[in-house]
Length: 468
Image 1 (cartoon, helix red, strand yellow):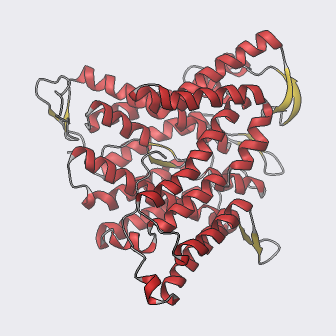
Image 2 (cartoon, rainbow, N blue to C red; image 1 turned 45 degrees about the vertical axis):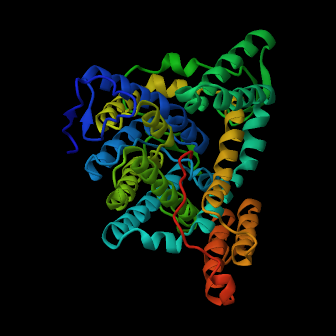
Image 3 (tube, one colour; image 1 turned 60 degrees about the horizontal axis):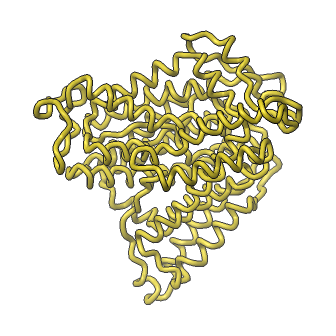
């Protein structure tokens, strides 16, 4: 079924109440149009997160298309989804770079995370998904997602926001208003629209107020510069593969592009919490698509994990960003009632074409720091609050100390950056240590707690992360 679709009716938009199933399609012109909508929906976040992680956005967009194709093949076309850049790894990447890791160390750690998710997918496929919710109940996954998001607060507040506080404030204001006030599809792409508005505002500020003195990502230090610098765009070619990474004698990034990843046990530990978040995220997305299409997709949950894991492995193997199923595209399906995987094939091909344009990559890389400041304060906060969303949807009871105490300790450790040092070269800190505390002590207390506290612990569903 992966590469064949039945024509839905006369190929036109379905009437109210009807849906176009994954193995169906509209006429090809309409399918191409829907594919373009999916590209717009995934576009903003898919290249914003690589920018934030210090990876190549051109390569990330291209590999998102490749990963989507692999995903559709692995799920045999039964789970319509687009695989864009995952937000779940941003905190881990920030921690890796804070400890001196370069882009090769970042993508090496992400690659191992992809392997871990693939293994989980194989186990779920053959053993069933019920044991996932036993090991990672909503109380645990909510805490992990929360500490991942809120751990990023210093990054937004001390790195991006100070580069241009007024542009950051105006961009943030627009994103907040657009996400709530714009209708339907437009509210789903508020981040993408915020990038455009922030770019325009930065250009207007350059014309009206002149240069600004602040930290410049391009120079790597505080300089006096214009907010918008498109010099790299004019010199970039229209068509070509992303540039190769260049690392200096000290191992630091000089030019970020495609490269071979390297492995470090210390850094790999930092990405383990991201795998937990991906499990919850993928489970939530499969559940959401299942409810919208009316199809039982539980048998494909393991395949979805495998598809995401393989996509992440392939992307990071060449220096690209981690991938995950995208809520933005699920929103497009909900609005159009078209769940045809043919539209996702179109979107994937378009993404690959964009990824083969260095001029596009140079333009994305020129995004002003102040614009990223306004966007990251919203994105990082949303990631953190999605943890609370999981708790609320699954009625996690914080009157029960089995829930309250270990989660409280783990979240503060994760957000505060507490660490345990074992040797001069090996330590566990931040989100990794916080996740270990949450998982280990939650399950330890479930064994040791009095019977009346155990009985009050429903081990229900995973909780959907439709908005991550």
